[in-house]
Image (tube, rainbow, N blue to C red):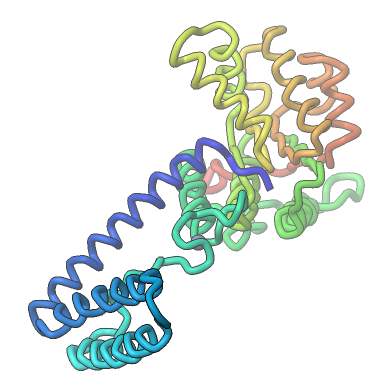
Amino acid sequence: MALDGKILARSLDSYRAGLQRRTRETERLRQTIYSKQPRVEQIDRLLSETVAAAVAAAVSGGGDPREEIEKLRDENLALQAERAELIAELGYPYDCIDDKPFCEECSDHGFIGKKPCSCLMEIYREEQRKELSSLLDLSGENFGSFRLDYYDDTPAEGGGVSPRRHMKMVYTACLRYAESFSPDGENLFFSGGTGLGKTFLSSCIAGAVSEKGYSVVYETAIELISSFERARFDKGEDAEEGEENVRRYLGCDLLIIDDLGTELSTSFAAGALYDVINSRLRSRKNTVISSNLGIDEIRRRYSPQIASRLEGEYENLRFYGRDIRLIKRGL
Ligand SMILES: [Zn+2]
């Protein structure tokens, strides 16, 4: 699983801010409890003194410190029991103001070794969802809200299947792809006219895969090419931003390129696109591409190499039917 550097940095900021906020809340609660029951504050002071005394006894070196330490331990336990009771009497959980990590798995480091802890991953998924939601309608566009009834059920001329039956197959392939997603180099190519649900199903896949904790980057072809251009031709911050985006395109677990063919047709664009497709194939990272163009048009517009990659290494799914946006408007 490859984490997205940009999202991870944001997640860590929010993770640390969350820790600080919760530490402040605990401190406020501590003061409230102290003011309601001053004996708790007194006990806390005594407890820290017994700990210091035990340490002093252990390192004193004179005589046998065991007896002294045992006595201190008994005092300590009695104080703890009294404290727990007093706090519970006030109606709070007995350990609510204890100095303990919020996450016991990672002691609030966010990582266990190099592996991000589940407490950090929870925030990561949230941040990624926010990022994707700025581009896609994740709450409205999910597998549960996909409407097959927008597709005509009349069989195609010459006895072919109806758009609805065909789209049911496309939908099922996308659902299977998202549900069994693993970074194994499985790719999809959506082709078909505007308003047939390509972005909708991309969005469903993006939401479901990111929910599993994989890094997902969604980008339109126009934006994707523009990042490559900035990385290549700009200077300073613009170039850095472009470079960071390119790193994300190459490194994420799932890259979704939407609207291929709407960007300006240049040899630079064709080269950049080939780089992304090829580099992701080589590192067996998954990609979903959608386009109004068919494979033959891709071959003419870009290059035979790109067309052959999409033909040979991508599952090709054709979108049929009438423009759903027109159907929704009753046209
Ligand atoms: Zn943790």
